[in-house]
Length: 344
Ligand code: UT7
Image 1: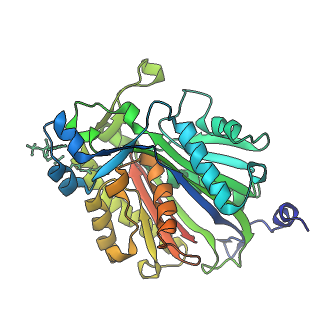
Image 2 (image 1 turned 90 degrees about the vertical axis):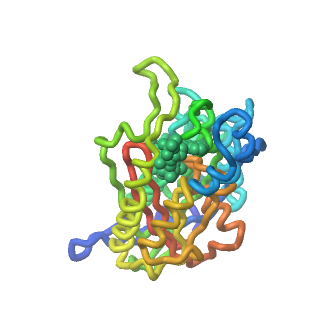
Image 3 (image 1 turned 135 degrees about the horizontal axis):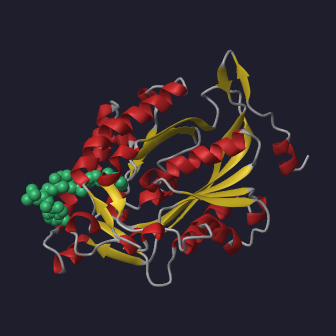
């Protein structure tokens, strides 16, 4: 039976004793990423701002970041990451049913960056859409893609996180512009049969949260209906206060939903905003930094791109291996936060 037909024949989710028992699992079969060529070291900012390499490293763990050059857009970087993921999975765009792209910095107000990627990949079937949950965007996108696969709506989903945050920086604001970077990462999720236990490969559980009362802690002071592009504004220390507690809680909730505990985790692959948040979350979960994939030193905070970038780099480094239990977690503007537990 051809692969596509075999996948279509997979059973859909069923419910037993009131608990959802997944039998269609969304399994990662390919990863890829793209980073723009321009690398900016912390010391560059010393030329124009009252800041230092020492302050940036000590407070955030960031050493350098990539910035988009003139020709780079969110969709062009997303397409490059997607092509790398397709190559890794030995698939072509024709094998993909849906594209879910997490971004807060789409090329245009509309159409979605996802449909632009669809066209750039030469994909003329299926469907594509963007998800906007700022730094938590990739976790939200994974949850959406998992639901599409679990429900039988799609058999293979390209899930991308791509951002050009350099376009919304206020270069005079030292408290934000030294923190962010640009890039894109992509995963391909494929429907495969699982036994419904947490030993299955694929996405095992998810947890999503948001609380709009915290809008003013992290936002862009412009948008279509206010007729400007705007710049990113952040009360960093306030976001920091929420981060460790909410991230450890969402990760633990997601693990609990899968019948797992922190001790079962091989890798935390966190949103890469600040090494102190990453360390604090691991500590709160009772895990060592040896169990954490860290890329913040080289990428800075790439918002929705940071988790797929870290997954792709973690795989390339030989850290993440088939069968490993992974928990990803992220928090950002909204506030919006969440976690996904998956077996690689
Ligand atoms: O990805 C979305 C979610 N975002 C995050 O998770 C970011 C969370 N927040 C953070 O990562 C940290 O809060 C920051 C890295 C943004 C800041 O670190 P902090 O330890 O919370 O510092 P702070 O904001 O409390 O500022 C401490 C001092 C201030 O000076 P005073 O008021 O103590 O005199 C700032 O003005 O550091 C000053 N400062 C800087 N100094 C040198 C702020 N930015 C800089 C800078 N260089 N770039």
